[in-house]
Length: 151
Length: 164
Image (cartoon, rainbow over all chains, first blue to last red; front, side):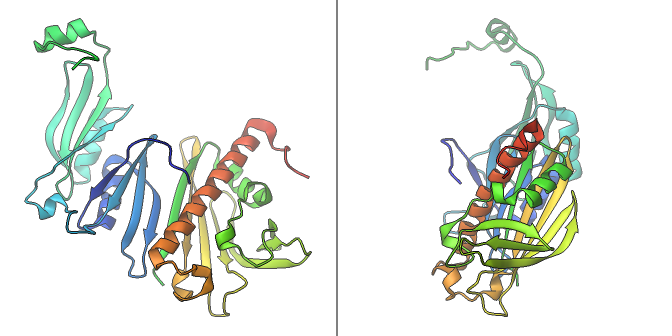
């Protein structure tokens, strides 16, 4: 299969098989590709969410570690965009065992978001647009000066 | 017997439509792969007939890829999968599930049993096990993409195109 230009995150877990089941239960991701070796270990796994893909792997080299092996530290987080109810998504994740770090709240820029920690410590932000907010209104609400397109 | 390939794809049609396209139109959506051909004389034309998956070769001979063990329309299909070069004790199996998800069907192919084919066997082309499985899995992705294109064609009312 050819891969169009784009980005895919590969997320590392101590137990990738458990992670695949958890990510489906908590976030509704669908397993789309799985290669298991003769010892039934995960050699390669991909999940889908909307038009996006996520790879899930084990600690396959000394440079790859789960937060569970790093005292809970993460060096990057993944944001999930949904077009459905954020509060319902949060309840589902919590029922699957997610630790809710920030309950759903509507942000000044018009998105409703929550943040959670997964079974091995990865941090996830879930977001849905709930309101169209003009730049002037964002600046008024936040007190920030917002510049678009120029650093 | 643990090695396995799993590939899944959403197709925008009901499970019965996708199932029918899988079994009735396999000659139209199949995409032969020269690395994993069933016989030295492949490719031929794929068909499900008499509860078997077969490849009708250009020579006129018919190669049986495998017998169908489960045929549950719109739900599940299981069939054997062997290459001509397999020894009698080498067998792999393909299970296809058709799960309704809203207005769509999630088609999942699970291909298992590759541990019955030893590492040095010609079918593996010298690849390490997981590399071989990944290459084969990529082929299944191509095949499901072909099935999706065919199913969409049928579902949109152009189903007679391509039939002989």
